[in-house]
Image (tube, rainbow, N blue to C red; front, top):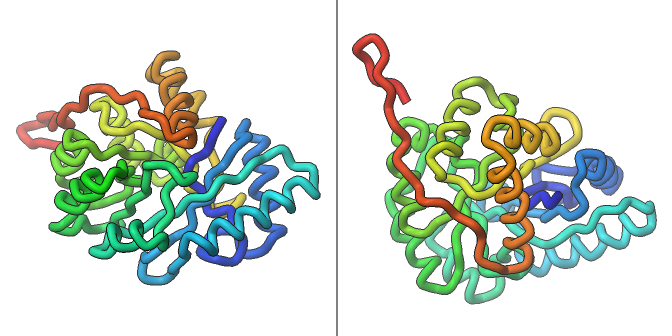
Length: 256
């Protein structure tokens, strides 16, 4: 299994603090069935700025440490960038890092807001030859209230990645429900851990993929597994025709 979103690099954001923390996370990932993990430290989120060269060097150091400690996990470089007006400039200048040097880039929204320029920025990223992946849309309150926004982003070519912990209910029932609605509407393409540690923000990958197979069947299970491999290999991923999340009428009121 490949985990495309993690904060396993030590000491550079709100994930692993020390090399020992990184090793503990690596062992936990392996126990979940993960053999390859993408390190995606925060960039331009108002608190952390982690540029491409720093991340690549940190990944090399961590991979050497994993070999030294005989932990069968391989780390690939990536970055989780908060949407901002300089994305194209930073991609061009080599400050921003795509996932494993591929055409895929992670784009994060603030937890309670989607900026008005998001649609144009996602389009411009694609014109520049990249494919934006919106990370953890299920945890964004504006998308929860206005899921049609997410539909239009995906319909216009963006991809999304939901969090394993959201899918299994670790972030509460409302986020779990919205995650399932996103899945049912073919509005997501990847499941990843977004792991920050081994306790409060762990992996949940094994549990999530077992639940995926149980609730959505083997075809979805293997499609999501394959998509992560296709992403790190810089290949076109599997995607199904998206649909709007339907509002269900209940006692005269509409709920999502």
